[in-house]
Image 1: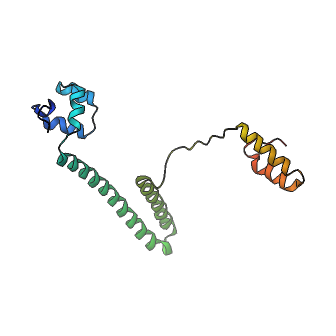
Image 2 (image 1 turned 90 degrees about the horizontal axis):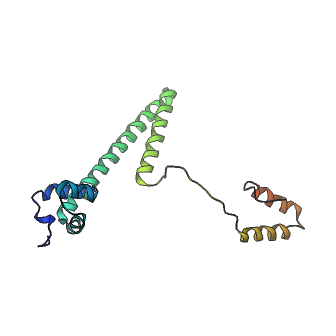
Image 3 (image 1 turned 60 degrees about the horizontal axis):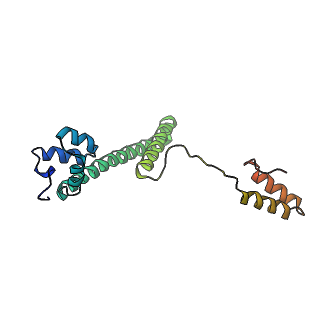
Length: 161
């Protein structure tokens, strides 16, 4: 703690620290406790290490709890699948679907699978136009190879003839 930190001397220091650790906007905290944003910004640089570590430990424990639950669901679905695969194909199929969903969720949570839309943008540069022309010209004596190149690039709708 800095000796001249105005926030450290505030009577509601604990509540302020909790809001800062919860990543509440500085303006919100400043308004609530009648402090300046700059004072809170300086104060956040020297929050007690044990408080910061305790908050991070809580976040990790929460994440571990979620992963543990996912792993338990995975174990149970696998167990159901193994018991049902011979005598109850319908139930086995449902268990496989659940295993697929759990695997997908696990991959998203661990960052192994990105969700969302992927946008690919093809920019036709003068260099590409020049390169395309050179390739097509070089393949002029080989009509089948030229045709194969045109077909391969045809999906991009950028080759004329």
